[in-house]
Length: 169
Image 1 (cartoon, rainbow, N blue to C red):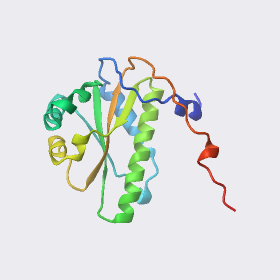
Image 2 (cartoon, helix red, strand yellow):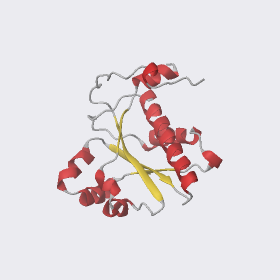
Image 3 (tube, rainbow, N blue to C red):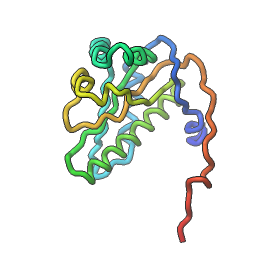
Image 4 (cartoon, rainbow, N blue to C red):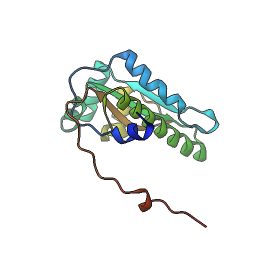
């Protein structure tokens, strides 16, 4: 599969099969993150794989209304960026972590896994961060859902490059 075909195949899944992603497979997926571009080689990305206790703590912090969405996928990974406090470097590091996340999502697609990148509100709260031990100085970029696909979502139409590319003189 070419890179373009892989990028085209990546979809946001909201329905997953019940089987968790094996630890070895997760490590292979997350290992791809190290190839993301990173300014000054800071490698700011952090990934926390939620076990049952961590998931229970996050659900408690989320409350009844939001906790149901945390059961969508059998494997959840919190992705964040470790920040330095320097505004310019932090901006670079958030972008690097987002690029690392996309590489991980593409690796999951290549492995035949379903994925979903979302940021539930609970991860923007003190209680949610404390439930997962996320220290001050890290910016949460999302909760990554992984698992076998329950069904293949339909592709969504995307704007052609001409709609967002400008060639300057």
